[in-house]
Amino acid sequence: MEFKFVKSKRGKDLLAYEGFTYRQEKEINGKRIWKCTKYEKEKCKARAHSTEDSVVVISPHSHVPDNGDILKKEITNEVREVAKSTREPPNRIVAQVIKKNVRTEDEEGSVPKIPNLEENSGKSWVRQRQSK
Ligand SMILES: [Zn+2]
Image (tube, rainbow, N blue to C red):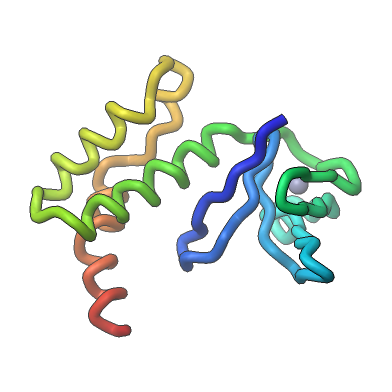
């Protein structure tokens, strides 16, 4: 099963695997230890260990996987990335990114709300950059 990394709202790596997302807890000898992002909300105790090419999930999740959530994060990340390198209006960037990433009706249902994305790609993102 493939795993990938998506960025959290704060720009940190999240591990995305089998519909679950994990936040890094620590790193020991090149092995990264992750805990479920629903740790607080769902009191989920699941953890995962990752090396360069594999992920092992340590304990079961207390909730169902959410692939839509991962897609949402990916789209948001990409909108933000594209927004850095273009002067196109946010709504056009959003439309392009959605078109590229969304291929099924199922996925369509989990597309983030356009106003949120515009907020992410535009104003709040500019503010972030200016504060650095
Ligand atoms: Zn969980």
